[in-house]
Image (cartoon, rainbow, N blue to C red):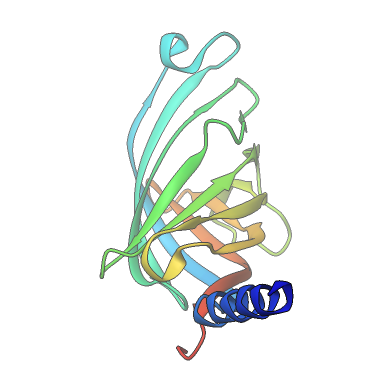
Length: 174
């Protein structure tokens, strides 16, 4: 009797494991997008003590994983351009509605690096983290680096994010 119960339980566990079996796939993440500054205002009430500016940037672009997408950056920064990760979380929304959640933290620096175009006036190269999402991005993880800048040629922010993303795939689906 005890043996039959153990065999039945073992078979049930294998059936559950097989039907819920998932695999992951890690692929490059490469996104280029442009932001339009909607608002850059002092806001110590929303941002808290020590913060200098509340910034809202409406972005759109293209990614190898997302396709065409939009995102809204809504964050606080201090007087030396530091923007903490707790305030810089965003959703990258693909045209089909699938959403990728990301978090970023770092500092905007004045000037340009040698590999930047001459028109760069400030830049930030900071780590980003992928925190899951909806649709095909449910359970996704990943990380990478930003390569972003502001330009003397326009009033936009310019973004290039590279890294990797690990997507959760259900067994039998590509």
